[in-house]
Image 1 (spheres, rainbow, N blue to C red):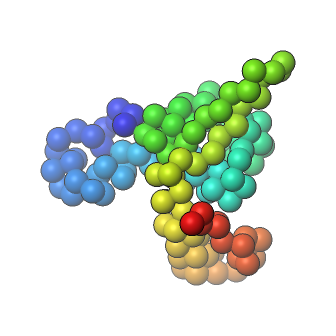
Image 2 (spheres, rainbow, N blue to C red):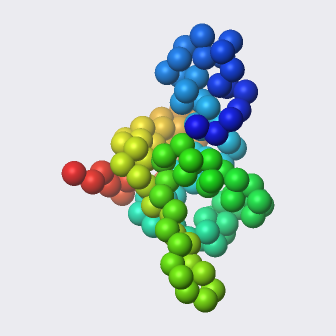
Length: 128
């Protein structure tokens, strides 16, 4: 996993499973990155950059690399000019999609009750 403050023994000693999850998701944009890749199945770097209003190229690159290193994303580089890079979920990332759907529902109900969810009728599909 990517190195961060949540991997220190003091943090891990409190609650190992939650600390491990926090160490993977401890980036401002990681949940949204996972959401978009899960929802659209395949995302290119430029598509994510446009969807994540306010993120810098360097931050997106860093967070994508961390999610890839932690086993949630797969990066595929196509030998074209210009190079094409696509991101998809790994099996581990796909296993996280039910939680993403639940978080979206919970947030809409409790934090954004007036939000009209364009994804409401289309939860992230789970592969069998």
